[in-house]
Length: 134
Length: 134
DNA sequence: GTTGACTCTCCAGTTACTGGAAAGATTACG
DNA sequence: CGTAATCTTTCCAGTAACTGGAGAGTCAAC
Image (tube, rainbow over all chains, first blue to last red; front, side):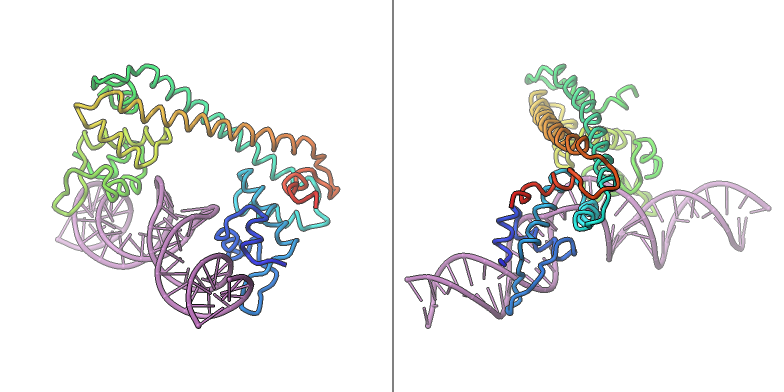
């Protein structure tokens, strides 16, 4: 049984974030003290850790909500979980491809740029290139 | 001289976004018609295209603002531009590294998961792993 | 008994838009 | 010339996931 700062510290989350998660009903404090302080038990802290990890993996809050209900569900099938994780994996791969072409294109422009004191610059030209032919 | 929808279409941006860019003073319409309609000339549209391209490259609005002032500055040095672009390139590379380790870690969990009807699931266990040893 | 640390709620701001309402302007058609 | 459709305006609100701060109450220590 601990107050919010101890729970936050244990879960390695900012206090503000823990309070936020409680507000949106993602991970509520199981109890309140007489003074109204949120009180967390081990199980709640475990959920906070779970959510932090899932967030680090790029799962959205809504996906966390879904995962959390699976996490809590003793009867879930691992297939349900795998479906969500696989979807996320594909999104990551897609993002990687995008970043790669972005990187290549920008690197190409940077390479072509002398970086001197003169005003002509292939980067600027490259960014404006769509109408450069006008 | 064209109204907002033509400018937006030419620049391949939503009308809403063009209006937004005007609101925040990023790319203003050079004129207003008698009725108060925003009126764009070729130069303004060119700036809109420039901003769209820069945004596609992941530059923030503030970076776009900076790049745009360089774009408009006949006396800029290409070094100024190269500095901003290089910084962005490093950010992209860093993001790529993060995504890679994310991908590897999650892929590992997905691989380990049978995806059957049984409740035990290495993905769930992997997400909760920090406190799993408790 | 009062200082300092902790907690509460509520409100505002962040980024870069996007959606919608209500109202006026313009254009197209008959 | 009327009117219906389309376009434009402003303003307000919402998105995602927090973060910061104000003002007030609470708790532990010296």
